[in-house]
Structures are given as structure tokens and as C-alpha cells.
Amino acid sequence: SVIIMDYMPIWLADNSSGNCNSLSYCPASNYTKWNNIVLDFYKRVDKYRNLTKIEIWNEPDIFFFEGRLAENSAKPDFVILFNNTYNTFKNYNPNIEIAGWRGAQNAVTTSSISAFTQMMLSNLPSQHKSFSYHPYTNSYISDFLVSDEISYLKYQCNLYGAECSHIYLDEWQPTSQTLKNQSLGQGNEYKANIAYFLQDILNHYPENITEIPYHWDDTVSYFNCPSRYGEYPSFWSSVSEAGLDNATSPVYYPAYTIPKNFATYHSAGSMIVRSN
Image (cartoon, rainbow, N blue to C red; front, side, top):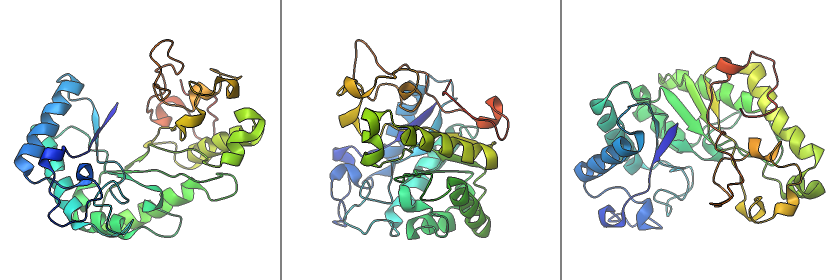
């Protein structure tokens, strides 16, 4: 499992720079207190097993951290926050995997990395044994190959001396509303996009890639629009995380969509037809 360490408690936020569009998206005013909070939170959620992986902040490269600064620009305050948080957990237990910071869509492309990504790799290369980002696009069939993005990312990591041996694609979906609306969410083109994404990863990077599909728009979830999900649960539960429909009884999304290392379950070139 993976736990995300964010956002900032309002009472602990430091907006002296004036760069925060919300106090929740600020750096800490006291990193001793922040470090104690995140470590205590981790111990409770992990139940003192030291098994849960950690991601530090969701999409800090866009408006979720100091959002008054330009998206994808360098934000030096986040280097300080990440470094403090990383060292806190490594000092507690060096075996805990820090799965990076959750980069937004443009953290990596097939031919560039953002100024924010450059900042992180250049300042903290040894702390990037893993890298996490969100390769959203309208269509995986027509826009780009995610494997090409990963290839370019690994090239850049090597230039900066960062390991980046484990890549987390922890939010992804074809975001085109046109595809989503085809046949009330049952169109073959939408399903083909899901298959194309998975096959691309399996054929090029069957090892050390964790992918977590994301239900990108709750307004058309099964809970809110059940008429759109005639094939539930055989297809839609495999591309939506558990609990994202906000339902308590019944729970429409079973809790079996979890991160897996492809190589553990599938050989290169094979096709995944469901997530379990």
C-alpha cells in the first residue's frame, strides 16, 4: 500500500512568501512539528509494520503547493519540505520505501522534464530511488506512448545521478469526455485505451513499474450515474480505485484494485484483463 503525506495543517502553514493559494498548500512554519506529525500519522496507519510505502505530497509542481507560482516552475521551498520528510522516515527506518513526490501530468513528457522536476533531481538525486507521476492524456492510442515518457525520464535521472529504479504511475486515465460518453461509458475505444496503456507498459517495462488507475471524474461514477455502468463490475471495477464512489452501503467498488509489480504477476508481452 501507499500513503501520501499531505497537505499542511492550517495552523502549521507558513505563507510568509505569499505564494500559497491556500494555507493547506504551504510549507511548514516549524519542521520539527511537521516531522513529528507525519511520522506519528505513518505509524498509526501502517500499524507499526513499516511496510507501507510513502509518497510526499500530491502534485506539488502545480497549484497544490505554493500555487501562486507558475505551474511546473521551480519551487525551492518544496526541496526543504521533501528533504525534511524524507530524512524523518529514513532516520526512523531506512528500509521504508519513499515513492517520491506525486508529479502532475507535465512533470515528464516524451522529450522534456519540467523545471520543477529538474529542481528536484538536481538538488536531491540520492532521494529519487523511486519516481512518481501522473501520465494523463485524452487518448493513449493517438497522443503518445507512456513507455516513451518513462524512457526519457530514466535518461534524465541518469544524467542527474538519480536512481529512479521504481516508477509509480499512480494516477492515469484517458480523460476525454468524448470517449467516456461513448455508449454510456461502454465504448470499445475507451476500453481499448485502457488495454493499450497496459500493453505498452508490459511490453517495455514489465518490471519495477507500479500503476494505479484512477477514476478521473466522480460526477460520472457508478454511485452517481449507475445507468452508465451496465458492465459493472467486470470492467469498471478494474479501472477504478476502491471507495472513490463515496458509497458506504453497498460499496460498489471492491477493494481489490491495489498497486502490483507487473513482473510478479505477468510476463512481458502479456495482457492484463482485470486488476486482480
